[in-house]
Image 1 (cartoon, rainbow, N blue to C red):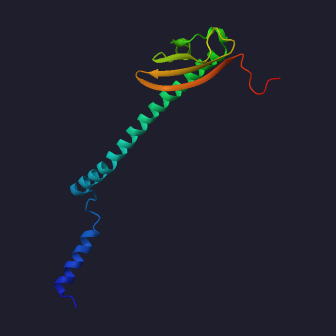
Image 2 (image 1 turned 90 degrees about the horizontal axis):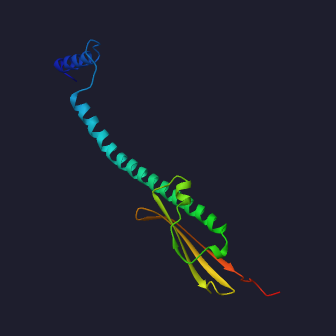
Image 3 (image 1 turned 180 degrees about the vertical axis):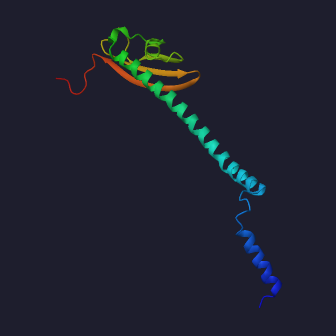
Length: 153
């Protein structure tokens, strides 16, 4: 059985806790602990956000590169076979037309079979898009002159 002094101490503590005149608030230790917990959570989140932003910029550059390569490939497909000469050229139409002046579009044409004088020939056309030193898109196609596919009639 508790003594009279212990009971009196318990009653005083209960009265102190229930006293509405005491100002409710946070202690300095509670505030410091909250700041520590928030900082522990925010550091990894900030790294995650930074990695996400980097991937968004890379994705944007890759998409622009693929669009420029596709644009140049359409120009190649609409060009006469004889006008596509072997070698590497750097056409600037697509990059300036689509509003990407910092990208470089290059077109490489090589003969896979035959040459200009041959009755039948096959050209490999490679479109490369770069921004700075990084490749942002590549497309390859083959164009044939007087080549019959399948059995001869």
